[in-house]
Length: 211
Image (cartoon, rainbow, N blue to C red):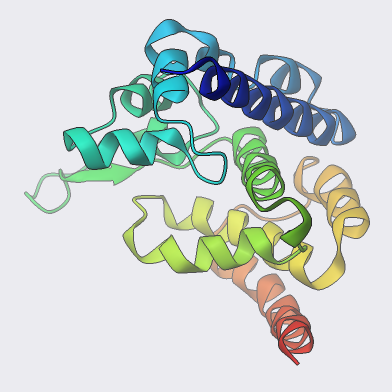
């Protein structure tokens, strides 16, 4: 573990935390902004980050490739409620299928923090290459293997799609004034109706950037 990597990792997690804090404060989520990702400074997470630091991706991915698992990630996801993996539990029901591990429905404030976290991570790693659709592109690439409640997935997707189509100012205003105030039904089918309106706009924006 080099001093250069340790410094680079510290700067990366500090910058990410500051981005999330600003985003959460913008939405009135002051406590979550202050407490976000504090476990990254614990030895079990911090030293792994220093050892496997890359600067353009999570060190946990490198640890996972080397060991077959990431101890830092296992520690992190069990202590941070904005991660969908925190909410994985045994399903309710009587059949074998119903009792499998499933994603539980996350409280809205943590879904919003998850949105801010994903946007901030995209900014942190992509730097000047970041656009308002970056977090949506990353989400779309991995959505097939997520273990997440259908209503939670729909709400997260709505925010990401809206960001890609409308930009930060309008999206953050919508989250603060509509989503966090309970004016948007937290139910998959109802959310998808809203999302469909913005998906086309987001796709048009993506085409413009590739032309």
